[in-house]
Amino acid sequence: MASLADPQVRMRHDPVPARLSRVPWPPSPVRPAWFDEPHPEEPEQKRQRFRTVWISDIHLGTPGCNAALLLDFLRSTDCDTLYLNGDIVDGWQLRKGWYWPQPHNEVVRCILKQAKNGTRVVYIPGNHDEAFRDYVGLSFGGIELLPEVIHETADGRRLLVLHGDVFDGVVLYARWLAFLGDSAYELLLKSNRIVNWVRRKFGLPYWSLAAFLKARVKNAVQFICRFEEAVAHAAQDRHVDGVVCGHIHSAEIRAFGDITYYNDGDWVESCTALVENFDGSMEILDWAAIKAAEATQAGAAPRRRLEAVA
Image (tube, rainbow, N blue to C red):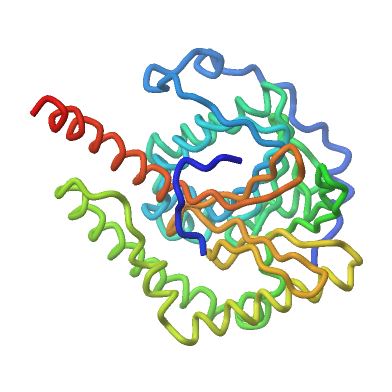
């Protein structure tokens, strides 16, 4: 795909309970009138088409969620299949205190409209939205809930799609450490918001302090490398050609022998998505970098016109 910029991008599940499998879902709800009405704040945007889009780690229900950038991305793209690859809603944070502003409603609304308009939407719950794992095998609002998926690309490759927390030893074997780390991470994201509030005052684009620090902390880098190797090894054992996951908030495309490892990133730090083009090729879209480049180009155009007049 011709990119808009050159951004830097560099199991375990229980079966569906018998009592739930007998419950019709969804129970034929009546859609509210606002669902089918055009939203007054939805601008007409040029849309890019992809065969498949993967997004994960949105963390709706937290102040760190970059809902505005995500909405811009969703309104700028169309796809045949949309994978919501875990941690879409942050149940851990919502248990501590309710936070759900209008932009988070708009994200949900936008995804539901895509499902209504013919996009296949698959929701693979992660560890922060693990409550939805009790309902895998069901669907609601046209959205399928599945524990994992084998996706076949346009060029015939088979990719294992899952959130990835099953490979995180801290989440699996020391849950209290995971919650402790989550609290420290939330503090980092608060700092991230303060930094970007100051940057907006000076007319500067979004920049992720959290991603910057993570890339420079030795232990974080080592953890990411070990995680990627574990995921790729599991994909090899499953006899697939590659694996797509999220969980660690680090977008990447990397080869491990015959296995291609894909991570679609997140929407609290880097604001990235993984996309498959119609020829089967795949790439990471760094939406924050793309929007920053667009803003720079838009600001340069008036200057060029003034120089020409002078």
